[in-house]
Image 1 (tube, protein in one colour):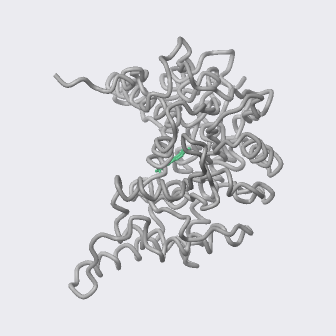
Image 2 (tube, rainbow, N blue to C red):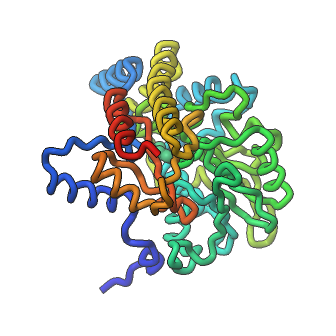
Image 3 (tube, rainbow, N blue to C red):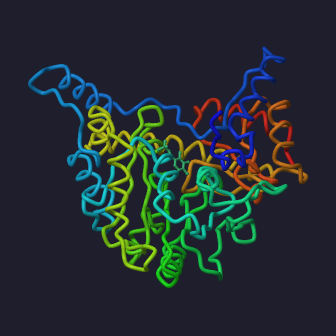
Length: 411
Ligand SMILES: *Cc1c(COP(=O)(O)O)cnc(C)c1O
């Protein structure tokens, strides 16, 4: 029998969302009359913008005719889309990104997962806690860690612990790390970093020759005009950061699949002899070997996000979810819960009442209010004692969920 990659066996078995799914379906089976309201998994619910659908359909029509048929596209993505991104996502914020520095992909999940494989096994990695679990798990798969301890923390990774005392902002470490993951607006806490805070990370990275993996999947939800949308708004970041963006949460593409990663040409790392190597060339090499591009209709659909009609529809989409977020935040705060996020992000991060643990509160909400949240402990040890609610549901469902919670927990 073939021996498998033993690093995979270090992964904690019950990954968060399957475990939630298991508990929810068990409950639903025993309580067929209960109407569940799901505010758990971070998936959008509103339909795609019309402009996006029209563009995608028109592109399929092009593919149906011999004269306009297209086969494989460029591995990096079509220039029309890379240009639209540079012009609309970066230029208005004073950031110069060359379309050649943009790589279109089918997902930010894959890009945030794959970027680490360009780096040496012995690189020292720092990851916020709590955060999107993909960063940790992919470093485990790559063999950069030992096994997990009782709290689920892996030996060999450095956790940037954060809690209420820092407003859930990870603090700059004193030691040197080679790779630092950051996610702002943060999933799961919904907190954002100011320009000064991001500048301190960029200064740290430059002083320590570290690379920042900056996940900006939720940048479109930023409502505060002073909060940076891109790490490249900070001077010097193009020498030390890559940025991941996705159309998933921005434009409802979770089922359509399109994202992109910016790898600046100025970003240099070192080979084993200490000579400079451009990460841009290596990421290009990786993508053209392991990835064959996003479908043409999906890239046309993504391009339509930047048309006037597309922009307007996306603004409305995000405003809808952010109204929900505001409503949840206000209702829970009024009830006496300690609540974070929800202002520049579609997530509400709340302290469990009476020091219940994350899974205990998850169970209570499920059984008493028939509301599904996400236990904070699934996002890292520092998430214990917290629960994440998402604002991606319908207005009516969210109003009902809040009313049910109010009846149980007016604390
Ligand atoms: C949803 C999400 C992504 C990625 O989404 P894709 O659908 O894979 O593009 C990336 N990062 C975070 C933090 C997310 O929550």
